[in-house]
Length: 126
Image (cartoon, rainbow, N blue to C red; front, side):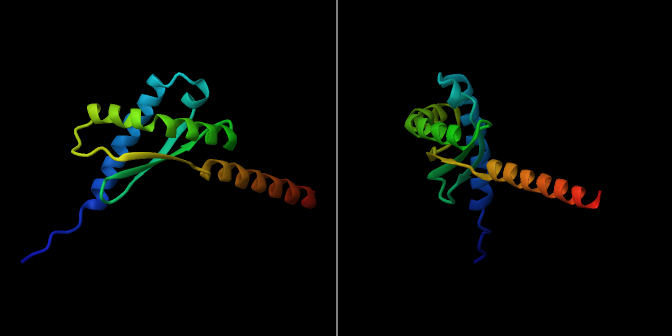
């Protein structure tokens, strides 16, 4: 008997992309809080069994604003899940969990360190 290749990873990635796109659109159109509306949904990581989706959030105003947006989004997550159920053709819509994504802030810190190193190096050579 021939075994089928596991497709759960690619299916999870497709569902994640779909959930991310629809969730971002919902946040833009349905959230009244301006601070939360300005949050960026960066990535959705869906579990292999498609029962849970962790959506990573960042904010251009920094970590504090992103964490506030995450708290607000976790409060409205059940409403969003119901909205996704009506928009998407999925047998089971994953439970949504929002989390802070530190990668953007870390990138800014790395850029600042590199700029400082370039300035210091330039100052020594002159």
